[in-house]
Length: 447
Image (cartoon, rainbow, N blue to C red; front, side, top):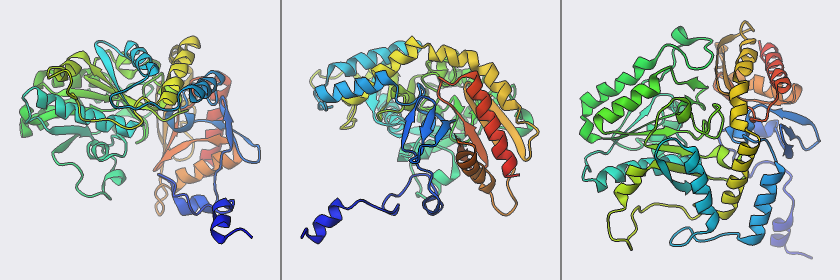
């Protein structure tokens, strides 16, 4: 007879209790789970074989679609060749190859890449680089970090400190000291039903001058913003906003960090949104699309001048006391190189740019449906705001997600009362029509 301990180890779990799901109402999910068993190209498949159209590219990450053969083969080959190499004091060839490929895609002199494992780690890495940069240059008083209301920069303590989504912040104490926030760039009164970058709002960048006047530029290390605030509900940057912010940071010696964890690798029709908006930030954070969601990876692309500031001490000494066990993991690098090949060979960034007008027109057809308050589009993203029920804020969008999955065979993403649609870049015009027809049905179903 096997022991009780052995039986416990080998038993197949028959309930959902052990797993604590992230950013999910666990009790509601476990009462009626939404399970996915496999995926291919534009589709998920449930355990019972039902095909479900992926309207969200996973979590904004499977830009090349699901289970692409070349990426799967690259991961398999790498696992058979080199499973892991030490990330400190040693490395492997693919880390350097991938860094070079990413640097070529970035604008200007963003020439150096520091790898990590997620967008959250990328943001905390960029914030630490910013603080250390000013320190090694003899400006150690520059310790203040500036984020933006409604911004999302991951779940590390640095990221939630500069972030501006209330529920991501209020449960976790005082967070980092010395953090301030620019105002959010969204105003329904001035921007409702905008296609692309709204005309109103560039002046909101000037609030940085107020913060400088309050604290003095000599205390401010960096400003971090998303070119398109994604997780809060798809808020495109107003026309001229990022250019204005770049000029203000230059004027006051403040580093500008663009958080491109969502917008990088084609989501807005370019390698990085910085290219779309014609600016060169001091750092770009990335993750998600770098491996098309297949293996966790993130990183920071750094301008030459920032990197060079660290390269002045004894050559045998560590220049930046930061890193992760799995920085530039061999499997992630193999997946990243294969994903970049797919993006190039299938011209997926250009494809997204060409599809953007068709996408925006399709999204705007939802205007006038019951309870639709606003629709925003930029690149291959769309945010649809629904009116809340007086006694249940967030319930309508949650029910729309449920209806979409169970009755329309569509995955959508929600945040409060906003539906976000962000498909893989391989989406066709026919699939765009299907996505928004299904979203329309879900909205009508929860009227």
